Length: 192
Image 1: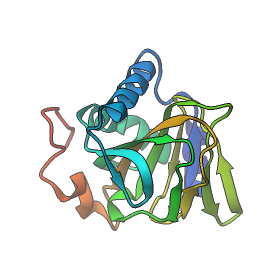
Image 2 (image 1 turned 90 degrees about the vertical axis):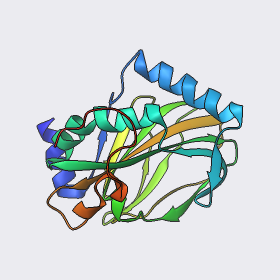
Image 3 (image 1 turned 30 degrees about the vertical axis):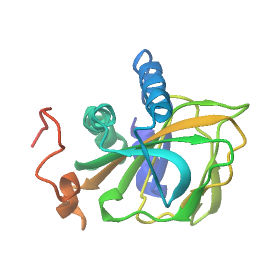
């Protein structure tokens, strides 16, 4: 873990293998796919056509459960802000963008996909554009407010991704704790 926190401190991103393990990984993948099929999700301008859900109770649970791991990887004391997930289909994109202040630290998680290979996330770093492929359960920690990121049109049939957002407790965006809400909106204890 020390290597990851050193990498994150140095380059402001780090790939982590096995962030979510079985059987939770399969349950989350099936759940997100079923939710997308149910028609209970929205879309958003960042990925027109992809099914999107902010603040889902199961993904919010993951946001809180992975907080200690996120702190270990980043070497920072963090506040959770909010969670989001999307289920993308063939041809979907993610437009090129940087994130808002409540996404100072982002963990993008691959929950699963139906494709010949992982769908890369493009990350514009000081060393050039990186193409980062994540297998199911893998995650990418990065500074979403600093690094421009996007995805080209997807070749596969579908991909489910969760996005967990945090802010540095001692950083410039600490006021975005819980995305400026009183708490993560579910009955689950949070450490102070």
